[in-house]
Structure formats: structure tokens, C-alpha cells
Length: 211
Ligand SMILES: [Cu+2]
Image 1 (cartoon, rainbow, N blue to C red):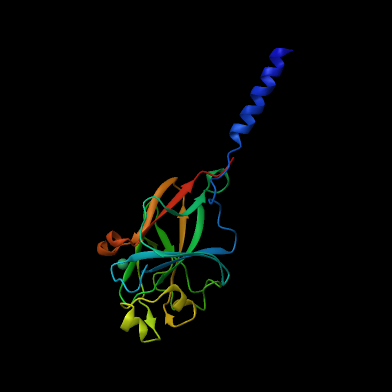
Image 2: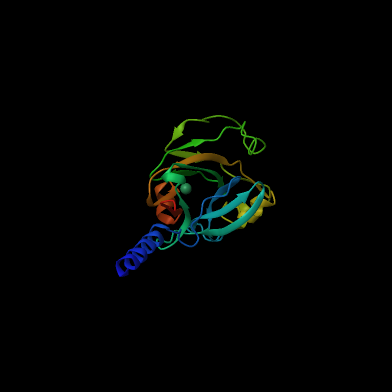
């Protein structure tokens, strides 16, 4: 009798142990959502303050936002779990260059494909299908076109996220489909060394799906 009770407790503990949960703040991107990464300056008055901004977008609505900031090795900007049975997860990322100079997107651990203009979610935003479908390791981002003189006069040629949202700066995004299949913590960053070293980098974590 006692043995059965012990066995029962043991089974219950095992059941608890196998029901893993995701860390706080780590969840799958909901269907229809995509991520938007901004390449800019944390402080437009400081031309050395290279950084990345982040938004989670549902259709046209921003549902989460992190202002542009320089790389912090203790900070994970994005966390996502693999799919059911630890399957590959595809995410859509929209890459926006807020600068009148070139930036170049690069991510570790995985390559990515440029999304086609025919994708109904982005058909109005994208200009052409050039490069669409090809597996890429890095991609240069079109430069921003400011509509207001302040950007050149006072902001070192860098628009803010707000100015992009209210169309004081036009910048055609590059949209990419990224397949995540490897667990771990890695980074995405501007592939121009001076910018990367200056802080235009962020950390991403891929964790196992809960079982
Ligand atoms: Cu750059």
C-alpha cells in the first residue's frame, strides 16, 4: 500500500516536471503578427549612438514597442519558442532604415528570404520583387528620404521612429521571412562593422517549445 502511494507521488512529480513552461516574455508570435526592426540612433543629436528599435505589429497596428537603443549584452529583445514537436518557426520581419546612410541587416544562426511584393500584407509598401525568394545571409536596406529639413539640420541625417510613422520620413522597408530552427541565444545586427561595434545590434533567443 505504501509502495503504491510512493509510486503515485513519483508519477505525479514526473508529470509536473515534463510540463515545461516558457520563460516570462517568451511566446510565439501570434498568427498575422510580424516584427519590425528600426535601424537608427538612440539619440539623433549623437551620431555615434547607433542602435535598433523594435515593434510587434498586428496588421497595421503596433502592439508593442521598444525605442531605439544601443546593444546591451544583458538584454534579450526577442524571444520565441520553436513550433510543435520542435518544428521550424517562420517569422516575418520588416526592416526599416531610418538613416540617409546605408545599413545592412545580418542575423546569426539562420539565413532568410526576401518577401515578395505580391504578398498581400506588404503589396502597398514594397516597391519591387528584386531579390525576392533568394536565401540571403545579409541584405542592404534602402535609405530614408526625409520630408522635413530638421533631419539633415539637427538630427545627423537620422529620422526617428515617430517621424517614420507620421510620414515625415519615407523609407521603403525590406520584408524578410526568417526560418528559426536552432535553439540558443544569438544576435542580429548591421553588417557594417563600425555600426555593429557602435551598438546597432540586438539579442534574440530561441527556446524549445513547451511539452
Ligand atoms: Cu549600419
